[in-house]
View 1 (cartoon, rainbow, N blue to C red):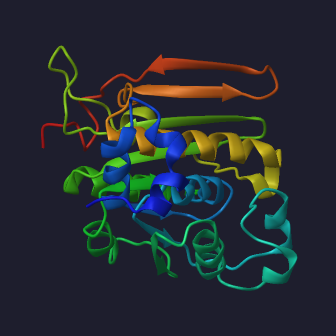
View 2: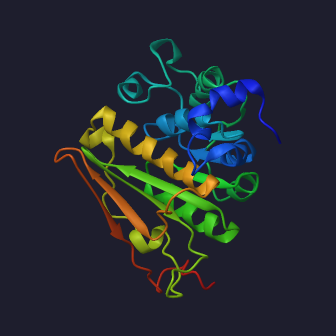
Length: 255
């Protein structure tokens, strides 16, 4: 596909980058990305993926906008309270970029519907806020060989990584999946409703997730697969650590 004059102007800053260029922008236009969870992480990730010209975005979430969301979920406003998050987000994203297609999935992703949902997309963004959803996405993305960009946030810190466990590293060792990072859910599961969170942190981590999606689609730079990017907001520091493959996990790359 070729870009129109309007699209060339819109994406000029991307096209100027040798790592993306016109060919990379066309890859973005042809890509299909699913965002699971339209909360603190899904909002900024979706905004920047829409602005970047990702051709089709799928938004999956069964929740409605609440007043407490507005501290960090910047696609929503006061007038949107009690409306479905995916519907409100879709309207806002199309206002950012009318050239993209939006698919809204206003339901909770479960074991019964996930396979059919994933089949329509190339890359999956995990913006969920519970371990059950993260394990579910991890396992089914592994089975369908879908690139999974995962992010998580705490009170002042967050992390981002990419999972492609069907591939191997330079030594022939399978790349890790989420179960290599978190083998099982903790007995007590905390969330921002009980511990609090600085709103701007979700913008930092969600934006980093969008960068990794764009890199995976265009082939720019080094993938985060096999590595974990950790951001500490209180100390204003960032580091990347290696994720080790765990042969004991159910998705060990050799299934």
